[in-house]
Length: 500
Ligand code: HEM
Image (cartoon, rainbow, N blue to C red; front, side):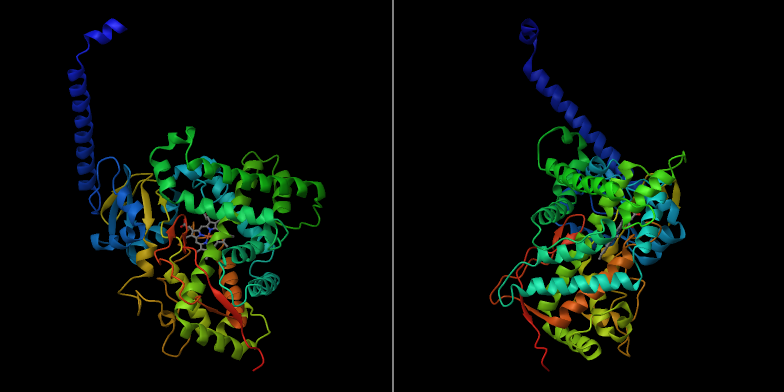
């Protein structure tokens, strides 16, 4: 070996390596140029990393800039091309008219690593996804969704939340924990049959892990992992995602074992009970996808997707209310006129509270909570003159639709007038797409709408929120993870004077 090394001419080795590297770069540039000539236009990608640097530096800016390239544009995330659909007719043509063709879930390595593709959210389009999603929707409905009992449960939780927030009355505090706990208690009562006290340390820790994972998985950590998934064998911040996911799985596993001990098949208490019974019913069915792994992941999906989304929207809501005290006052007056100070809101009250209802829509429009919704084609197809092979990644540009200058009266500012007609009634818009659309539309849309309406209306009925004097306002770009969360901020709340 030593003698071989002695004969090596290091200059030549260096030159050969440099030559090899140059060839690789040239080949990559050639591949990129040929890919760009076949695909829709978009920002210029760099070899190997594509548009990833822009996506890491300013994800919202990059997504917002896509419409300038046309109704369909391309962006390169690493070496993968993603087609971005920038206007509503193109999005509808794909996701509604050809829904099944665009209903594949695009591979997202960091989430595949922790979910193994089980459950609903990250499941490939096919039998397992269909069965798990259908069962979840059916069971959510059986356990109260769309019914009075669920609305009453949310209203009751809102009263607990108000009591909790009032512990900080007049003093600046960061409202993330009580809001997450309150929102999570709704999905927990459906899934686990239980709610958790705001001072339950173990549950508080679990909520922290959920929030951390939603941020980490969609951040630079997740994006780098997606380009080089073999780093899973090495230490690094991605290991935190794995540990957090395992803590959540263990929590669910323990709940399942508890349920097994006390199960009464004639009196199902919640989603887990229903799942255990479904598993045994389907035991002899060869095509059944009801097994332990899918049970843990479906439960985890509902818990995860049902907590941070609604909670982050409510946190954005408080920011907009503190920024626009006139809107907060107008909502409060409308609510008190209809409900007084004490009656809890129900979904029936929406029609009598058009300004408040429009304000909640506007919060969701401006929050633009899930800017990156990634799908892939389940078969080869054509769209607006482009050929899309099977497995092409496609993203509806929800950010662009929610800020479409040709549609909204006030696209770039927070203004509930965006959702009001000339008579002051709610005007619905097909550009309102926070839950996405098509066969993979958010499975919790009905639940989220009920939670947002009842929590928001109850809070504004009883409390007044303002910025602490002199406090810095958070950067409104938010933290773009799997959902776009507000940066931490403090608020001050006061109980409303209920004597007049
Ligand atoms: C304001 C609150 C919420 C927003 C903005 C939201 C938004 C979304 C979006 C944009 C998607 C992706 C859809 C797609 O791939 O095209 C999604 C998927 C999903 N959401 Fe929600 N969501 C919210 C609340 C909830 C709640 C409360 C639940 C719990 C029941 C939930 C459960 C799910 C599930 C299970 C999926 C995966 C659907 C599938 O892949 O088939 N979400 N959500």
